[in-house]
Image (cartoon, rainbow, N blue to C red; front, side):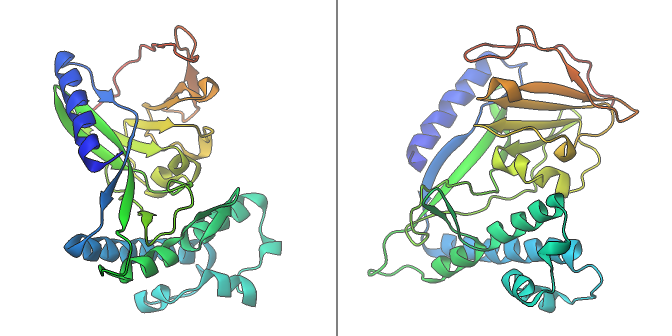
Length: 284
């Protein structure tokens, strides 16, 4: 939808939240596009540079940890070159490590999903550098955001970080899905909420941040498989997953002994069914 339509949807959600002031609402996600012009282009371009550097820092830590690289050296790291030269040898990696490497690879370089191109940070940066000109098509940014409402106010927002064919294969100089920030983890009434949207959970983005104070890890998806290893809530915290796939909709408690405990939903999750689960509030 357009940015203007998004504003109308958000206003409707605010009004709904105002009717139920004591309910914290995670309203799924809103998927919209906005124009990329002027100073916005520069700000987003700077954000892409930051995203790329952070990605490379994590990659170096995971696969080149024995090297003492400066920030400038990290910025010049080329994952493709590492694989081509054998600096990182796929044959020595187990399946889990290969999946981890794939995460860094697809974030950096354009990849194909069933005939649709998903641009990586490298191609997104090139498209952003073209700038505004009469000869260039008007570039749009696609955003996929989860909003959190309480008492008629938006108290949190999370921008989806991992692209999974968000733009249906559109060229990045026309429509780009630029990674959102991973920094949001709002505190509401003394409780800390970490959020992921769909593919972000598959990539373990919240777990990678290393937060230790999350009372709730919330996932909204269409749909993604729950990964226990990517759960990031603290001890005595909860994992909440609302999915269009009922088999993935769940509530999981992490007791002090760290043994994960799935909790019963009543009625059981299903298409078009509103399920409930009564829980104790995590200790503050």
